[in-house]
Length: 359
View 1 (tube, rainbow, N blue to C red):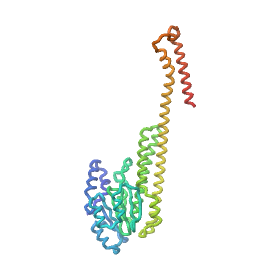
View 2: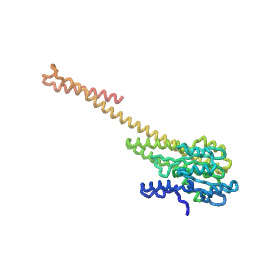
View 3: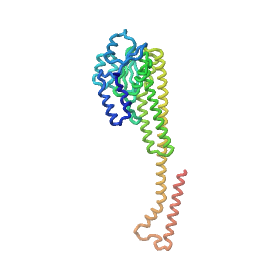
View 4: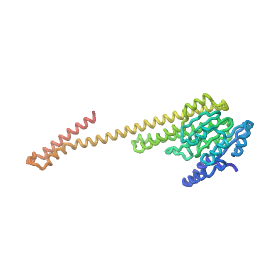
């Protein structure tokens, strides 16, 4: 019976009602991993397609040492309670790999440790939503004969890599698998940039229709998500340059060239991401200017109304006093005289207010 594709479970059951799908995904996520936390493993040889292996078969292959042909790829679930303990007992991995398991989310990086190539690759989970930016981390350790990967939550990039392996795509070294992972991560980041660009286009169209209120909230949320994704998904340029200048001896020249191309693809995607962030920033500034202009217009209207009502308020205040000697009290045309005074004062106040506006 073929092993169950646990990483693809949330996708396979996407048509199920959301509460049931979440319950199934949680059940699968916590129930599997009886093989010491090993989700799946493959053995690669030059003259045969990749062969699935279990933990016992992997240990037997490793015991052969240099006599064993090809290399292994083992993918683990670090949420399994016995996974780390089993790795420490059976796999002679660098101490830096185990130390990184207790760390939180950090930016994508690649570094050397003796003959091992260690990598931390962040990726979006299957239930990713651009408004939530759910990120999980993939830990990688690779040398000439072994590639070990592990994660806590199902990831898109590792599932795409497994799909490529099951299709029979040729991988001659663990570095080729790592390059494929980086390319898949660049594809995910490019998809996020494309989706965000589409949403920014919608916001910009609403902005042209003078609909400001919801746009400010949307742009702020998108900008925060993109900044976080840029910090976590983008690899450290210095680490990539060091690796390109001093590639591992067990990596083939073709793998190094593909790694260089993957780095260039990342640079293009990061450039698009930076341009999108700058575009969002300009739209936020435009919205802030429009809000400020609307506020100034409202304040100006209230100021004009107050200035126009000032003469009549002054006259009403004086003539409303209950004291003797009120002028024009006995004059036959006293009312019209006051009307003329108030109209003249209002006209003068209006002329002053509108002159200030034109200036």
